[in-house]
Image (cartoon, rainbow, N blue to C red; front, side, top):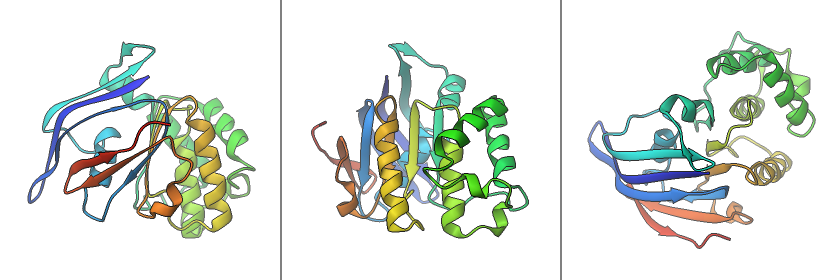
Length: 215
């Protein structure tokens, strides 16, 4: 399992916003750190197929086999920094909608709910409308949708925002477990919360400034 980035460049409204950068990611819990505006969110959006690549290449592999763009999207989960919800959907409907986008059925939703229901406190929220939830509860629903189908590539942009201390600890524990069989990339501006990660990547000005040894 691997993501290989080669000379990747992304342009924003005011010019070059990311890169050129080259990087290889392997299974584990990987922290992405850096000041605001350093390019963390744009890199995560790029890997999660939200923004286009202007030059260079990104390759996704499973068991040494290159994946097509469609296969890579199906095997990816993404949590944006901004809360993005459908207010009139219940949490159950929201999860089913995301499963449909991934061409997955209700069984995958049920499996995700069973796995995360008690641990991430999703079960009591299933039949409540997204618009009626607190911001922290909405964040939990977004984290749950990212894990539908047990993705091999999981990208989370500031997922600890709006969560209390207990929820943060549980999420970190969950991500540690998931990362045993997936590439999990997590951005966080609070460096003190990056303990327990297999690797950290520091960004500045749209470039990779430092990569810690993989643990």
